[in-house]
Length: 157
Length: 458
Image (tube, rainbow over all chains, first blue to last red; front, side, top):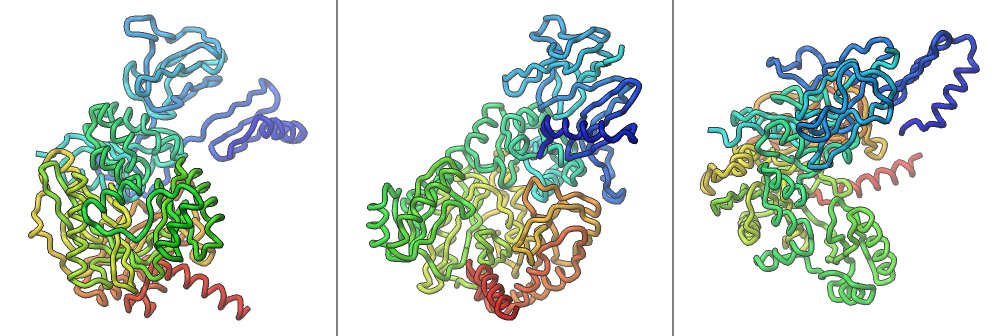
């Protein structure tokens, strides 16, 4: 079950009415809703990171492990653009063409920032937020996993 | 020389662990494709590496052929092992692998297609001289259904041509019931498989499920590894399997093995496969049911009595090697039983119960094998099947094997989710199981009887 836009609206209304609270976090399935009152009212919805709770005794002896994503430390106002599917990551629309984005570049929410190809099918990945690109973490023409962080965008810069 | 450098495991759970271990034995690197819910699974930890192929729901990950193939190519794999379920019996997936330059560990797309359509499979069986349950071809309409039923004799069973797992199946006891049964079975088959084609078979009241394990290679060798008896079922789902079957004699065993080999040769079959038969205990005849073109859940039963590693054989055969043993090398040594331990509550109609395992202490010892992906603290997600472990034991005789299984299951400690262990202990201790009087509807009939008793005493 997923939260609908209406559900989120209702939750926000309830929180709005609870004047004794300054900050609230709602975790529901894969959703994580964080709302802060006052100063700069900031709300964000992000995917919950996977849980790692295995006993040490069962960890394999070799260094190779499960697909741990290198979770970048997101700074204040930074948003991660994550791979919505597994596939090959491309920074440019075609070989030799200029990249969609470079670090330091300002982007709008509906700008394409990269492509992910799955079996000759190219999917445009949008920035999702207005801001400035601060990091490009995926390597051009390499496989990216589902939910891998590709690009980091600062919304406050 | 290993047949491949790196192999992609397109499955999850215990079978993914099983394939990773076979790769280790063969000196092959393994890459497991996991869903977002399975990043921390045992298969992902034991494999050389793992890659997340999509979100938790199987349709967006384990069933997504394009993502699986892209992941295998992208991680530099040469071959894909599909395990069982998911994409294992989809001819289109096997073709997609070939197009991407990957070796599909399994039979040819043509074999998968032929056996996947039940009516085509029945025709192949007939051509190979393998008897089928007295029955019909495609049922076109109600009039044809009535004629077929009159010829076969009631009760009859309606079945879906594209079917499996009991869906699109209806028992018809008399001419009065046939109209409604035809309609609902066709609608169910259409919804489940996208194909409402039905056929009809005589209904066998007391049936045992007997299947023959076969293995073939690209060099024309086809061998059998004896039978498994999977008669302890609940709603067409197998719960306990054993080898050899306590219900058939040497003569019937030989005839079934020969029939399975004829069919496999006729279909030019490569890789591991299973030819399923239904054994009518009343007239002591066995009939062809279907052929499964994958490694089966219960394959360890055969491995325990023959000593041959079927998954390793599959991989080597896919790499172009011949089967590494001959028919004369296949000897059935003792008896083996497998119990499927599921995260289900047997007191609440076997309701699946996802959750987190607090205690996980499986049995161990001589001739005790546990195939599982579980560990203390691991999560059983709600998205997939409820199989936690397969406990397989071997003994010199059937009676000794049952005793050993009772000991093993009694020592199996699990906490966090309910399991089917108490149910298995009840069955193993029953006179009917010990006396080999269990048939494929025994569990369902027992459950119904227990409910009646409970209602009466309440």
